[in-house]
Image (cartoon, rainbow, N blue to C red; front, side, top):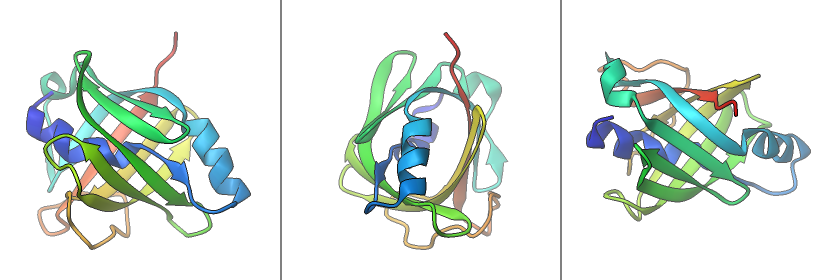
Amino acid sequence: MTRFALFALAPCLFMVAAGSDDAARTDRELIQGPWKIVSITQDGTKESDESVHGGRIEFSEDGYTVRANDQIVEQGSQSLDSSKQPKTIDFKITRGPAKGKTQPGIYQLEGDQLRVCFAHPGGSDRPKQFTSTTESRTILLVLRREQF
């Protein structure tokens, strides 16, 4: 996976539940564990299968780690709100090239698939739908739960 693609999308995948919302807690628990990056579309351009190969995101109760071929490229924390439609997630990058920046985003969890769409690091406009175009300036990730 290209470094740029990994750095741009990594922060979107790590969650710390906001408040005591039971639905958020449930989503946080369901998202925990390892996820394979299936596809990345950035500003309307889909990354090649070769560039995302080996990309993984591991969610824990209080954060996330993005790896490319077993090397850590980014870490951070996140907060989510499952009471909104679409559900929202905010990322705070604590390790990597965009350290100190945040990303507002949205997420959708369906079984073993997780879709996350977010602004570029430091962006302030939260996406409203799960698309990535040159006009929207968003990053769309599709993840699949890893089976062991």
